[in-house]
Each structure stands twice: as C-alpha cells, then as structure tokens.
Image (tube, rainbow, N blue to C red):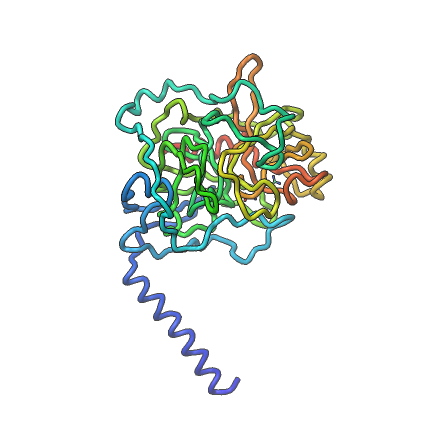
Amino acid sequence: MTRMSARLQHLAVLSFAAVHLLLGFICPVSSRIYRTNDAVVIEVDDVKPPLSPSAMRNFGNPPTNPMMYAVNPYTGLMSQPYPNFPFWPYPPYPLYKPASSFSDADDVTATSPESRQENIACGKGPDAPPQRKTPTVGIVGGSDAVENSWPFIVGLRWGFDVGCGGSIISPTRILTAAHCVDRLSAFDISTMVVSLGMHTQGNLPKPEPQNDAQMTRRVTRVVYHPSYNAKTVHFDIAVLTVEPPIVYSAAISPVCLPPFNNATDQFVGKDAAIMGWGTLESGAKVQPNVLQQATVQIIPNKDCNAQYKGVIIRQQLCASAPGKDSCQGDSGGPLVVQAKAGSTEWTQVGVVSYGRGCAVPDFAGVYASVAFFRNWIDTYMKD
Ligand code: ARG
C-alpha cells in the first residue's frame, strides 16, 4: 500500500468515527436494543404523542425530539432470503406531507374503560369464510371485505401504504411477522403507526376514499424471535406493544389464539381466511385501497416441502387455493380458521410470512405457525 492511500484510509476511518461520535452527542439514544435468550427486544421511550389524531392516523408519529440514533445490531443486513426475497415494505424517508385533509374518526378511548374489556370475546368476524367464487379482485384472487368485518386485522404503516399486517391479541399487543420489524431502527419504530378498525387505507396514488381507521396506536416495544432467519424465513414471528391500550369496539377486537402445539398438520384441509392491504399480484406497484380477503386451504407440510425443496419446518404451515394467496404487504397478517365446531369464532393459526411469487401454481403461501409459538407469544404478552 502506498503511503498516500494508507493516509486516505486513515482519514476515512477517523472521519467516520468522528461523524458517529457527533451524531451520538446531538442525538442521544432514547431506546434500548438488546437480546435475551429467546428474543430481540427494541424499546423506544419518549415517543411523543401525535400532533393530531388525523395526522397520526395517516402519516405516523412525528419524529421524536431529540432524534434517536440507534440501529439494530442484530440484523443480518447482508443476508439473502431464500427462496424468495420477502418483500421489503418500508417506504423511503422522510415521511410524506398530507396531500389533503383527512376526516377525523372518533377515538372511543374516553368512553370504554379498559377493565370492561376482559369480557370481550376473541375471534369475532364473519359467520363463514369468504366465498370461494367471489369475483377476483385482490389480496391475490380475493374480494373486498365487508367493512370492519374482521375486527382483529391491523395495518402497520411507516408511510402511506400499509407495509405489513398484524392482528390484535390483547389491548396492548399486536402479533406480526419478524421480517416486518427486524430491520427497523428505534427511529423507524417511533414513526410507525398501527391502524385499527380500518377498511380503507387511503393510500397513494388513489387517496380517495380516505383512510378510515377508527383508532391508531404507537409502538413502544418490538420483540421478535432471535432465531428469525432472513435466508430460510424460519421463526418469522414478532409481538409489538402499543400505547395507550386499545379500546375494543364492534370494529376493533382481538383474534383467538390456538393452544400451544408443536405438531405439524394440525389444521390440514381446513378453509382459512386471509386478509390484508397487500398487492393484488406479485410485484405490483399499487396496493388496493380497501381491505381484501380470500379463502385458502391448509395443506400438509409434506406437500409444501415438496414445493419448497424441504425448507419448511414444523414451526411453519402452508396454505393455497387456485389463484388465491396472500402477497407483498400482507405479511404479518393473520391466517384464521373456524377451529371450533358449531362456533363462528376465528382462531389465528398462521402469520403471513413468504411465498414464491404470489398465487403461483404449485407454490403455496408460507405462514408461521401460531400454535407452535404460543408459549413464546404468551411470554411476550406479559409486561
Ligand atoms: N413477504 C411478503 C410480505 O412482506 C408476504 C408474501 C406472502 N406471499 C405469499 N405468496 N403468500 O408482505
């Protein structure tokens, strides 16, 4: 190495260090990112209350002040997911400015005390899975959901479009996929919005009709499984803590969770509903404005392994139906079945994880098994 280039390299390293030191000073870290034996935890403090409900509903929390300077060191940024890169749902920053004004939906926080919520039954939803023969509109091959008929679905937003789905599992917890949150910095989390009781996401380029979320919440803690692997997309599960506690209503209530069971094929052959604001086909640039739903069937893990060359393990399950699938932007959302005979109650058995394209014949959608992770989820539902 010549002396010149050695000096240049030295300079580069020094200035890199100096810039980061400086950033550390002017942007004190008000978050903690740490790893326990069974979780990566990102906690964010001082997330400021939103400026106005309508602004928050659509554009996220205002950046905290001072700005947080923390990135997640546990992230495998260079890893190449297999077999299909899970869609990267995050819009570029900074956050957008409102293009028009948005109507204010009533936040019912003041009217129903949290203590009454214990009595709210989980798993409310339509009486039956979406018709298989409905005209093909979206998720892939789905149809518009009846407004607020799936009270447990939530949209996770960093910008206009819903980047990922999630489900309400308690007044303070949202279940989603690890790949939706594992690369977020504390700053990203502070700008994130959970939209509840929403039918129309009010996205661009067709912001009309407008976002109709009945409630929004900010995220104060992200916990995802430390064995999450972006290459194999194994252990794709995460629990978010939201504040203040969600107030349940006709349009907002939790999904039921199955008991812990690490056996494969527990729900094989069952019709399962999927729902989300994800794309209507693989690689589509535009996401639908209103919530889409479809019915798929849970297939044996053995069959799924034949499709995916043996990468499917017992903490995953697969579901498919001709022309129907979840797709990019549906990730983290629920796959639900009516598990109890004689009951219309909906139980979440899967979390949308990945797939080779969307609705590709002979490639099912792959879901994280909620029954497999039930004990893990319970651990991170406690405070
Ligand atoms: N990984 C996608 C996302 O981030 C979900 C893809 C689901 N794909 C499927 N074919 N079911 O939104």
